[in-house]
Image 1 (cartoon, rainbow over the protein chains, first blue to last red):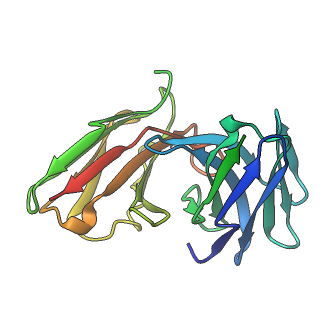
Image 2: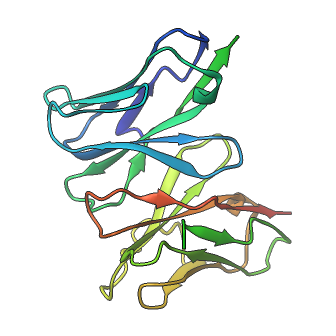
Length: 112
Length: 114
């Protein structure tokens, strides 16, 4: 979706290093979802953010929503091989009621 | 069930044939969504069902595509007269309700039209 831009498109990170993925919307966000996808598999739900300034963490993954910038970031601390995959952000815009529009995805590779 | 299930996992069909894809949502989830992921492209919304309300079909790409849902259970996505551009992974998701609720995705059906 051109209304939702993800960056970077791909990144390679050394095991143990941190990484950040950004998702920027051109429309007002009602909710922002983060998913992870491995090749040939479905999407694994990570987190959902719905209020400006909201921040959620699960294990080594933290997601934030900046309402002013209409932007969300996903941060992984001390990356591990299990963090490799494609990360997708999905946006629920104010008029969509659960119809998610997705960014193009960020491919993450974790090297030894 | 434990999660959203989809069948078949893979489907190869000849151009012009009809196909049916099945989705079993998580028990108790009233909202069900279909998405499509074509190679090299992002996920596209196709259709969603919420309870007994009329489905939102705004994402269906053509009238060859249709979907049905029986109550709050199984859904079937039908593609008639398949074309090569229909080749994609078709993903189904369900949530407790429509709107700001976590959507849980199935493993998808990989459709290849030859």
